[in-house]
Length: 115
Image (cartoon, rainbow, N blue to C red; front, side):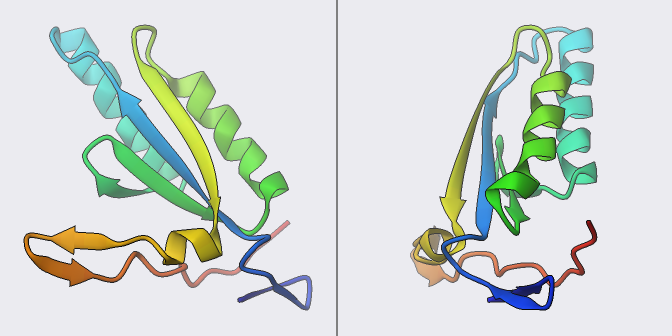
């Protein structure tokens, strides 16, 4: 659990916003647009889970609204993005395998929430 407004945030209230995308990269302009889109995600606090799959921790559904807006505005014209929100508890149950070894999912980031 995280502290927010001097109270604990429930694992059911906090969430991960997952962006899954396909972007064309056949031309130089398309590659540039795809790179700018990925850089925007990183600038907005998303981390890469896999190629074309990025996630960002949000303390609540309301906190994710601004990030959803940035993703929709930055999407290249021929690209496709799917956003899905999962609770922190659901995200923690994710099974991650690297080769034949199992790894733990990414931890909730240590951060100060400013509103």
